Length: 74
Image (tube, rainbow, N blue to C red; front, side):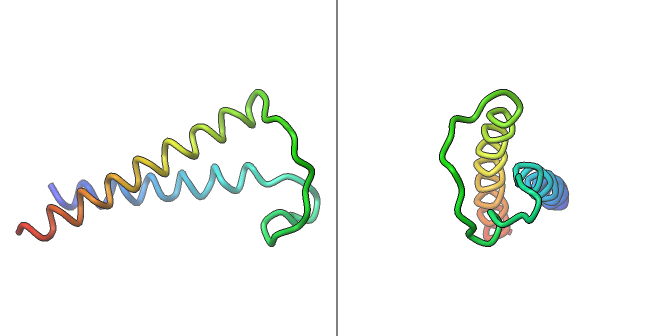
């Protein structure tokens, strides 16, 4: 079952990277490198992407712990 966990982790990590890159706004992408931004409320698609990012990060963390736990048992 361990190869399946690794494949799932790879899929989740690639999806997480794509969703994070979709959240970057602006022409220069200055937010990536610590550029100053204006605080505002997330709405619509932006809020959905934010929530999906949190959920995928939590799933990735749990999958990593599960993979490490199963790897130490065998």
